[in-house]
Structures are given as structure tokens and as C-alpha cells.
Length: 320
Image 1: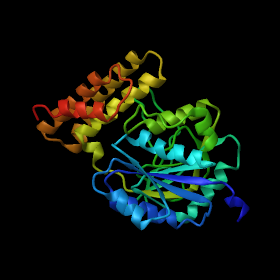
Image 2: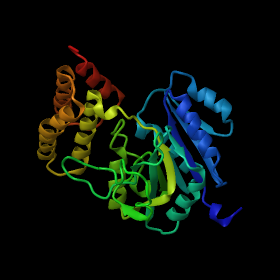
Image 3: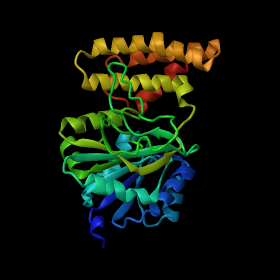
Image 4: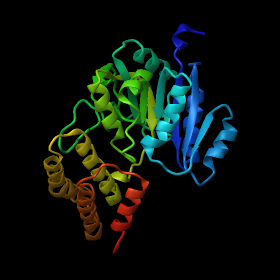
């Protein structure tokens, strides 16, 4: 075995009722030239039989079946625990709607283990449907209390302007190679989040423990994502709820910060959305309702799970 392949890597992929995307993701992982790795597919309570079909088509992967949708962090943690128990030196988290460029994987491994202080390596995430354009290369700074984590390079054509390895404050949970020592010292992904902000929380706590987060430009994936989510009033509600929780967990005087975040959303983000997207009056009212609901529900928020989110949706849908 090539000495560069001495590190045991476990690739953790989360599936939820999405056979097509997960199949394509798994197929890309199977093509990587790195030899010392195993794939763990975590099925988050799917009801479409996708995980059983994928297990038949990829018989050498390990599949974990969760009885229900546990959310992103808790779902991934099932696979992470399994990998650590089996002797993983590092865990690769990759979204099931992302496609890894197979030849780029070894660059991430080499980078992660080139320095003891390197705890997480992220890569250049490109747009799947427009592969010449960048989705993110990570985050250099976070603006509080609005918790703006504008992705570096987002929407830009890739002209090589981000081809330098650099340190980041946070990287996207879509593509993270994480050293085992990070989990041993920091812990697993924070399960208080159902879907959203867990990667920011995890990265910030990783840095607090003395690890560095590195962007490796030769580590490349193509992400499909949800192109319409930013226009959805339900997405706005979810976005605001999770940022409330992030404030509650990480900042002093959270009541003050949450109130400032509410003002920012209500009087800036709301108006910008209405102006840019030219929403109908009815949709504009729904977005305003989402902001108000998230502010009220998220005021003393400690955790967002499936049942909390379902109750929010029930209230959101009243009188619609």
C-alpha cells in the first residue's frame, strides 16, 4: 500500500428519500483512487425504500437504518460513531446531493495530516448545474448578530482566484474531512440543530479548541443544493430559528442579539426579498409571518428537533 494511504478514512453519507442523488454521490466516491477507506450510508428514516435498493447496488458499503428522520447532525453522528469505533483516522462528511471529484480526495487527506493543528479540511464546492461557477470555498468571518456567513466566491466563475490553500473560520458541512482528534476533543456534531447551522457551530468550537480549519482548493465537489430555498417563506422561518439557536448557544446577552437579529430580518432582509423577488402581497405576508413566528418560537430556544419543527409548520400553515 502506498504510504500516503495509511490513514483509514470513513465516508459518511446521509440519505433521506433520495435514491437518485445518493446513487450518484456513492458512484463518485467509489471512483476515488485512494484505497484505505470505507463508506457508511446512514438512512434517516426513509419511506421510499431507497436505502435497501442502494445496499443491493453497493453491497460493500455499511448501511445504518435510523427509525425516523433525526435531522442532519444526529443522523450523521450515527455514521461518525460507527467509523470511530472501527478505527477511523478521519471522517469525510459529504452531502448526498454532492458529487466528489474522485482524483481530488487524496489532496484533502494529504493536507489534513500535513500538520497536527489541522483539524478540518474543506474544499472548493462548485455548482453542479453550472460547474464553472463556485458555490463556496468557506467563510473568512462571521458578522454578528445577523450571523452572516457569506460564502467566499459564491456565484463567481472559477478563474483560479481561489486556488491558494488558506485558513477559514468555517466551511460548509456539505464537504468536510475531519480528523478523529477533533471528535475526541470537541465532540460530535451538535444535535441541537435539526438542519442548519450545525456546521458553523461545530467549526467555531473546533477553532476554540486550538484546531485550524483549512480550505484546500484541489479538493473539489459539485453540489446540487436547493436553488429555490432562499425564496421560500418556510425556509426563512427555518433560517431564522436556527440562527436564534446559534446565538443562544454561543453568545453572551442572547436576548439583545436575538432582538437585533429580528430587526435586521424584519426591516432589511424582508424588504430586500420583496424588492428583489417581486413577491405577490400574499407571499409577502407569508414571509413576514415566518419571521414573526421564528422570532417568537426561537426566543428561548434550546433545541430544534423533528417534532419542534413539525409544530412550527402546523402553526405556520394555520389560516393559509
